[in-house]
Structure formats: structure tokens, C-alpha cells
Image 1 (cartoon, rainbow, N blue to C red):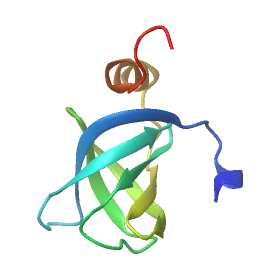
Image 2: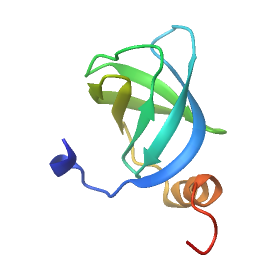
Image 3: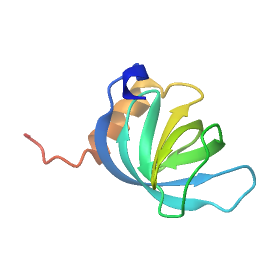
Image 4: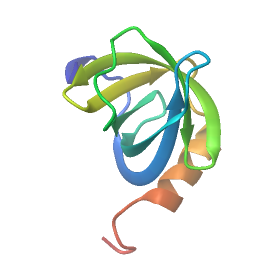
Length: 102
């Protein structure tokens, strides 16, 4: 899967929330982000590749995404449309877990 990635992922630490269809929203920990997708920890169980979800990344969203892979409770999704550059930069700067200067 990693070989197919077009954009590099950047580590972030932010709470997210996803929903499938009209299902109940579930909170997740978003682990990394690129303009075209992200990876998150889903403590609720396994997601099925191909599932379409609506995802919030902190206060941003909803973003429509498709589950590309799931390994135990870690899920990789691809966004239906890439994140707008300034929005992506804002998320990275606000939720980067590294202290300034690292």
C-alpha cells in the first residue's frame, strides 16, 4: 500500500470523528495526514476496505473518504478530493505533535 501513496504523510495528533452512511459517529485518533488521505486508530473494530466514510479532522470537515486498508485497528483512507493546500497546512501546523524547533 505504501508504494502506491502519491503524497508523503505527516505525523499529526488530533481527535477525529467518522460516520458511515447515517450511522452513529465514532471518535478516532488521527495519526498522520497527507493532502490525499490519512491514517487513524479505530478502537471500535475493523473497517472494510471500500467503505465510504464522512470524516472530521479536528474542527475540519466533513471530508468524504474511502477506506483503502485496515490492519487490526489502524485504518488508512483516501480522500474523495485532496485537501485544499491552505487547509492542509493549517491542520499540519496546528496539530503537529513535534515541539517547535524539532
